[in-house]
Length: 222
Image 1 (cartoon, helix red, strand yellow):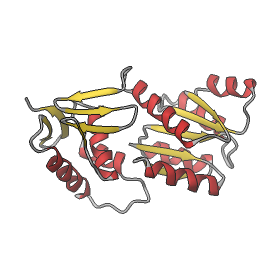
Image 2 (cartoon, rainbow, N blue to C red):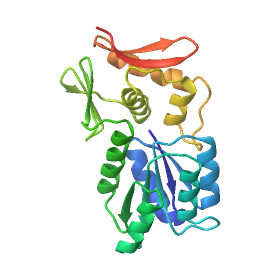
Image 3 (cartoon, helix red, strand yellow):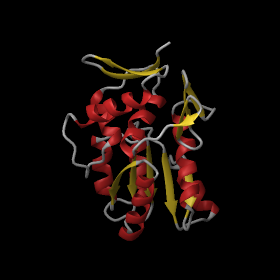
């Protein structure tokens, strides 16, 4: 799952980016509104974490431009302005959630998970594919009653497919959700991670099918 973090404080951005990567997110970072606008034009994100006080293009202007262009990506505003007027302005401007600085990373992660569930029309946090269960509250996979051990990239592959269960995900789309712009990955890298996840699902009733020329689908094999 890929997140765009837009924060002009380089130290805070580096800390947040590291924490989110440790939580199995792929993270792109922009330090100003202009760079963020470019990234949003060329890539898809599960969530945007947006500071309002940005150079070049401020966060509110960027947000309003997104919504006017029809981009419905969930946006969480981060700001030092915790006033009621500030929160109302951000939400009225098209934000989906609002988090005042300072904050705990656990709360930010919980808000990200809630927005992703809402974006996939899943009120319940649990997704079952045969004997594979994805707990959206903890973002853990349980296979036949046991926690499925995955590397961060393997987790990103399986999570994206689980959130799109029963539908085809193009290889390019899956790759984009797993790798950030700063990650070095060739065209075949996503195939390697899909293969590794398949090996870990062997013997279960959850299957990653390859639809030639179209992409991958996670489905119940029974």
